[in-house]
Length: 304
Image 1 (cartoon, rainbow, N blue to C red):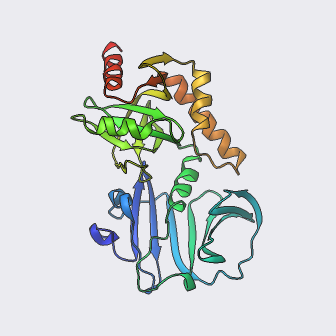
Image 2: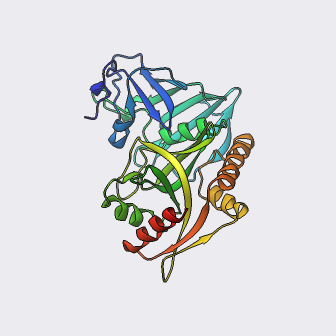
């Protein structure tokens, strides 16, 4: 079901998302603005609970919105502005026109915010997802950058022993290929084929699935302990090459999604990823796109 009323205690005017243990409470106080969650996000819906951030969704006329100082431009869909005590995210589309179709404002600590939808662009009778991608991902990235973890460009796999394998790589590195190979193995859960969140809880590092999948469309709200990190590289044979922590940390950061407009949050993200590289064994995985690479990874696990 696509509507948030699929869980007890939720309604068409409120829903709760839990992504990597972070809870987002989204509310509409307008009877004419009904809410829903889209696609893989439905697997991350939870009953009402304490939240990390509360977001109020509203209609608005955004044709004359005053903007603060631009501090980041994605080069495509969205930009970030700074004004007084808030961050403002502006979302535009060439197919709709120059007026933003959505503006999101959050306090500096990302504990509360508001999302305004430009009502001339929408049909009011249809329920909407106010955190439509990429806003949901941007929100989680900023929550993580408060010292709670990091999101990386990776395929994540929970094996039959409950161990987590993280396969890092940019687009085209082979994440989708590996995800599809693992998908056919018994007892395996693919947490995501494109985006994984890493967090420390107590003495352990955990990896979480996210709703933001890739071509294989694999997304799970499950989590598992992070046991090994593999940086993907196409090769002429299957082999694992151990990496020094300093090299691994740089590669992790290159495939992460920090808020580039905040030096403090950048520093927190880098510090966390250095900790990951120093804690978890990291390898370069050169591989051929067949199931033999899975045997190499399983054999390494048995030796460890």
